[in-house]
Image (cartoon, rainbow, N blue to C red):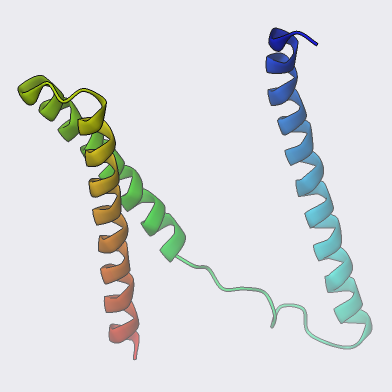
Length: 113
């Protein structure tokens, strides 16, 4: 099989697979709720609460990655470091973003107690 044909099929198969996965997840969640109702349980008691840590973590990681790419460009243009500057700054600032999200989450937990 040609490489170009495989390159076309990968996004198609990934999209179809994601769609089927979402359908089955919804189906099994619905079956679980129906089984809980049949046993006399309240299905709303066991629904997970909204978690704000995932969007916070993702946003700070992406902000850190963006700053890392920017600082990598500055290093590359100033000291001619090429790829090393981009990758090092990307990982450093991405890690700082994740560390910041951890500190914010810990402060939220301490304030909630």
